[in-house]
Image (tube, rainbow, N blue to C red; front, side):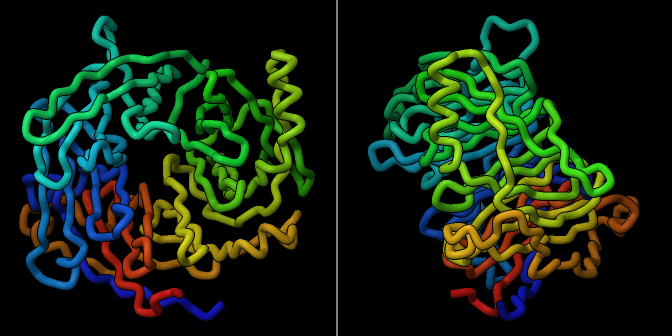
Length: 389
């Protein structure tokens, strides 16, 4: 494919009241389905940014701060209930924050673990595929909470968090997705890739280990720090310290999954990569994968401020033409020279001294912009000069 051209447009520091802050981590971000807003979270704040304002000096930003200054937001998602656009945010304090995204009204903050002595951080929130009022919350102690948020509407927003079910996976959960072909929820955990059904039956997976002297091996435990849907039953999985991103075909496990669920013996399902993507040899964790269906591009940041871009056309995956192959990125977008006058003026340590960890990369639904959020309090906006079609 022809070389992509991205130009740095805006480098925003909207998640701290200190303009010289280089330490607040921006953990998560997403574009709304229409692409008209970008939602980001980091520190104790959530920002909703009008994407039309990217092209202007003055940005249109709506900002929500948690009342508890100790809150550190780690995850955000969106749902639509009775025509109300609800932004759901959660993080280190184990609380769910519900925000009317259109009106920027935070109408409910609720705890999942009211009786717990020590609150587990909520690392991921996911809207249930069958009901927009139900959210799936995954915590750092391995507990999965299935919760109904009701149908809050303006102006009264009458609601409460109603627990439906909870269960525990014996691991720390970093991220959760729903994969529609296998009808499994898939969790990235410190003990590998773990799945569960809508009936809460847990499924374990056996993933490739780090190759030893060119020989493939399979480990019982791999720390998986990111999992992402690609298309048509294919998923991307990143195992920490492997320097690889694996593409698996979940359609290939249908019979094996059925047998494992019927036997109830917790035998792990072995996943063989359909494709392996060469990635950074970093020893840092938690740089999330994302995929853009419009452009058929997969993205992942690294700890040098770079964005690794891979072309994964559906034809390649569906034809099986990538089976067993190693794929290099089509482009590595380097961190540009950034002069932060606020940081320099406040005598903060220069930005270049620390690793610039790109926690999350997302692309505009129609490919117009590329966003990266970093460990240094930056939300970076790149304009797509090629406008991938």
